[in-house]
Image 1 (cartoon, one colour):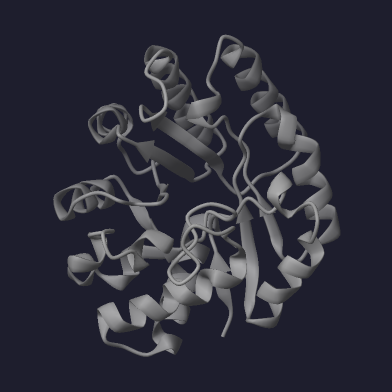
Image 2 (cartoon, helix red, strand yellow):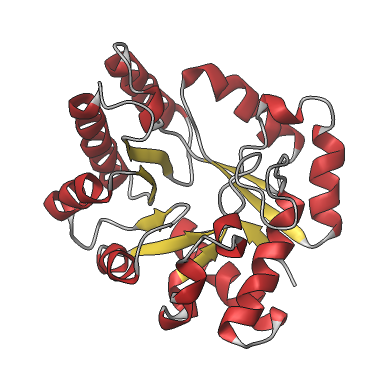
Length: 255
């Protein structure tokens, strides 16, 4: 059984001391596919080096994270465009809107989100959405861009059942990670009402470690905890969870 971590920041400074060992732990557990979201241009080189070290396992995205949309966001978007002309990527992400930390750049976040969706359409790529305290704002942009050429993953989904169904209506799979194991995570109370065909697994490592590692550094190995929780929620076998969610990831990323 091959597990797919559809969202993991393996290039993060949090792994500088033991990156290879951490990746090997995941590989040993059958987690063989790692999809790597971008943050901004300062991480591009580290992402390329990671891909070079693990060419069969690492699949790169490009994009500008909403919390990194600042005064220079147009320069960052230009960097993304230049990268897309030079080489292929598997998605545009992570992109979206985040109003948890700062609302100062909301207008710019909306503009960058919409622009990057249009880039994804141009290159026929999926998008990977980051949404925090911004469901209405994200849905507003998705509504304006909806169509057969809009598809991807709603990363780290933490909304309601209604919001889950709306996200799916825009051709988005739900990225399910450590939050599903939290006692106060809430999504575990309705997730079984969402077909498994609409779900992919992720860790968002080094963030949001699942129970029993909550509060510690997350790593891709802990995807097994997320998969185990879905076994309970869907009352099915681990093999079915792994097979369906990995097939879903292949459908989204085309690999």
